[in-house]
Image 1: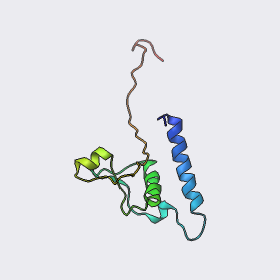
Image 2: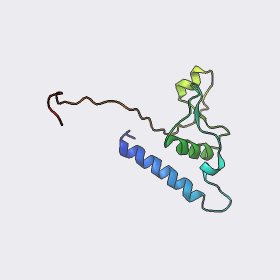
Image 3: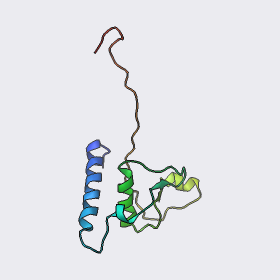
Image 4: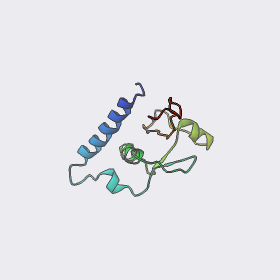
Length: 110
């Protein structure tokens, strides 16, 4: 699988639609109604933000995890934890703001 923007958009969309469709019956609640803790990184303690919150909630329920605590394989190793054989990662969206320098000079207004 390639890591293109279209792929992650589709992955996020498909995951959320599947969660909504599976919650149609009265006996199943949407993950955002059921879980009251924001997903966090196990090593840093930082809370996930944006679309990662509902995405990780869905995966938490799907995998039947008790806690919304996430990390990479390397991060789990760094804190002395072992990932169970056969476990798969959950997709997250990494975003970062950056400044783009103009190719035009200061004397050449855009």
